[in-house]
Length: 82
Image (tube, rainbow, N blue to C red; front, side):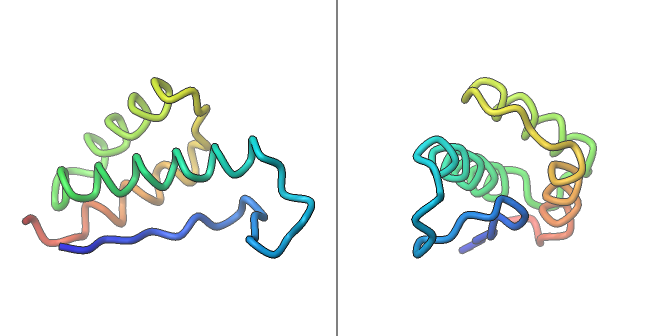
């Protein structure tokens, strides 16, 4: 299963010279964790997925945006269980 999520709302673009190094690191961490959880928890309840995402992101030093976190959780819960 190849699940790839894009990170919207961060305003980061490879051609944007104003993007900060920290912003890129945060975006990469979020993408890494979301993809990991999507592979492991596809089809699980959204609340369980949101809790897992929150815990993993906090351990990586990222303060998650609750609205985006819930959106990711909803999308992952709708994926077919693998």
